[in-house]
Length: 425
View 1 (cartoon, rainbow, N blue to C red):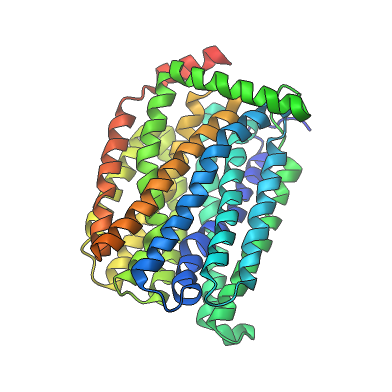
View 2: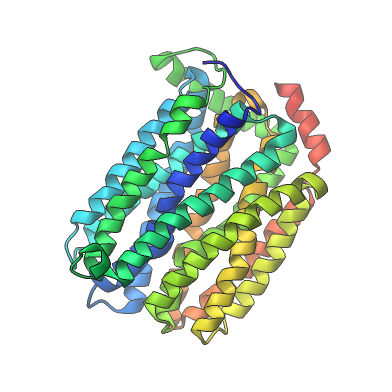
């Protein structure tokens, strides 16, 4: 298969994977899993205890990704198997997500273990999905193509989430016994949706060049390349600075995404209102991600990330004193305006700073640091909530992470960083 850089069919086939796998991020991770975990699988437990258990599950999944992400990326670069690894981890995520349908009420431990497995499949597949951007786009179009992926992710994930929400609010329309059955079936629909929208990438996105090694030669070559990349990151100063920045601010962003529903339940907001608010975020996020991509092309990705960080700081301050469901709706709209932007511009900025022929390996580090940050964030929020008995206090710690992220980002010079990366290609 030949590479088709900037070919529309390849670009949209790549972006449709985001349309498919975002159903896991919306319906499962942000929406029904924390809700169902607290009200069904942890029925009878104290709310602060279930918050802590959910934080541990999220952190465990992230911790496991930390150990495997860089090595997987290096091996995939060696053996020309980025797409193969993407399929394998997609299968893991799909299988574990579908398995949630069979978990009985009160069996929170099995639910947590399946969720950890599904999360590993989701996060690990993103290493190779992100790395494939160099196969479909030229550097000048990274911002726009990256934003397209996130935009379609918001739209596709939001559409299925809307169906799933309707199933839970009006289960009799679908011939279901009640909301609990609707939620369990929703996990199956995510598995099917994710599978279907992996197919365009399989058909129309080319595998980027690698060394051609296979088997154990690819494994040993991958670990050798991993060792060399540690050295290269030390030389690529601006890659290191950006990774530190990303580590800080994406920790806070991911924590907000994963713990928002749990936080709303803990302060007494109605579950149905929280789910509708998440749905609002998805559909606001679709056009907002596209707009941020255009802003990145015109003003540079750093400017867009700064705007998003500032807005998130306001969100945290507001959420810490939030009292009503109406305020949660407003915050959902505001988050939708910046969430896709900060994610897409971070990916496109990083793609500019790294050698294109080692994209999977470098994106392995990128995803590793994002997940390492997510080890700290959710468990920190859960621990502060458990220790203090007041969930509101836990949110304010996120301001420190946003501030550190902005400071490290200010030290990144894109022009110099790109020049240094080209010297290693």
